[in-house]
Length: 638
Image (cartoon, rainbow, N blue to C red; front, side, top):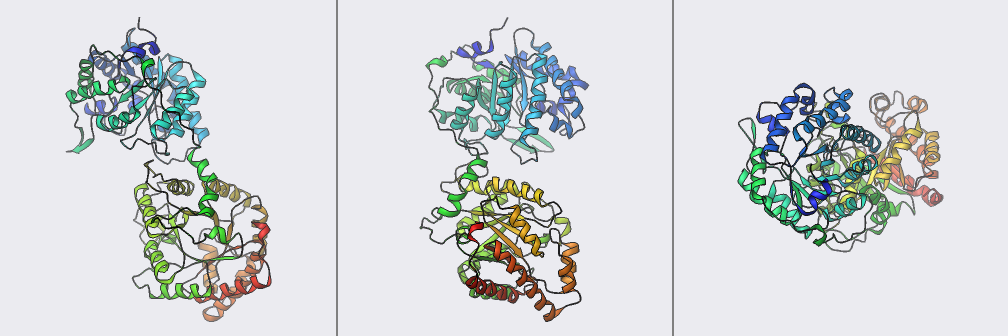
């Protein structure tokens, strides 16, 4: 009979198994199928893989259940078979393991480092369902593997600890950066998980032996708790339609001794590894005498930090009001929009970048608005999915040539996570620190309908991730050497049937770290009052959107075809049939009436410019300033 698993790794090294999915791929099983469904369809194949690894020297094997959770199985129509697939995985592994080999129930990360529309409650339900099935059938341990964020790992570990007292192994998929995607160092993550009850902490996948070893070497081991290591067989290459992993079995075996000397007590392999890699590992560690864990070093105590989401909210005042030093090292003295709006009526004007290469009219309009006294010029990010000039380039020009603060929109539609972070880093380098995070209209409705809509993130997530840059932490979790200083806005559409539901969505954006709110255009004075009442409990500034109408046709188009804009019947009647100067004059008159109500309740005014008729907003800006002299701003609102 084998000893208790916790006793086994106190003084010795246990050899784990190698890859399942990539090994099956080598035998002709295609990428895209559910390898876990093979527990039901071809159990003999899965059993034979387990036996090959045991014959190679594995003392612990993992069940074929990495992706056997409700969320991932539902993509293949297998969600009703979660329990059946997981229990079959344990039975097959148990039969192959006999009495001498340990069986760990494999539970893979559901998020996998991606931004999925899955709530914490759903994650908890999916993990509990899978873990319960694995434990019911009788695993010796649970192995939580290929997690990229501490937040998700912690959720899964807490559920595991609720369900069982059996050992739990927690493995991150990180590279030599040594940080989780949500910004924790490995030392911090390990300390927190160790306190939460993890028995073994370690690494798998993502990196080959060298990448994982570089992280382990910084842990200053051996440690007082066991580590686990399941690297890939190097980096994958795609050659002639096949994925090839370069690390040879001999190289893998040589690395195993170094891993053991750094505190690893469970050593196996992940993607690209085969029974030959495990056999080489077993040969290299034959007769190895491990240092007793009690003689190792504890991790240095770290003060547990709040989750990134919580830190983003709590740092909102610091980011928006304290204004840390800018990237160039010079003291930042310009007051932010959120500071100004708490003291007086503050005006943001939107001016769309041109659709062509001629920027003369745009720069002319920006200069006129600067002279009129606007506080910031905001530039959309290819609004309505129509291709326009880069708002980053134009923002830099109006900042340096005109001396007007740019407030730049950043849409989730056009850039993946790599491009989005690169874009934000560019803003920081240019000193552009005010942004508005928006989802962005789908590409298929714009002027290039064949273009892809990326949507790697939601508006909630991009707000949180931009605020993470203010912590000096990249989207990947990598330290950035210095902190950004972004003041991040969020969009709000009040033109909906159920305003309270829109406010609930707005509250989530504030929880993600939004510093201020900009609304869609409002054309109803009663709605402005209802917005004030519905948002009275919120403690961040709201800029009420007002866009003067240019003509009767413009009014009909906005009301009937543009998402998020709804005109009152009164406004439609007043604009009907008007065009040219007459239409624009009426549009300005209606906008002034809306401003009268808005200014009684809000300090923030957000004017949008139709068709580059910037003269209309020059007039409205002057109207706001004149009226401010007569009527104090509603400071009690803020």
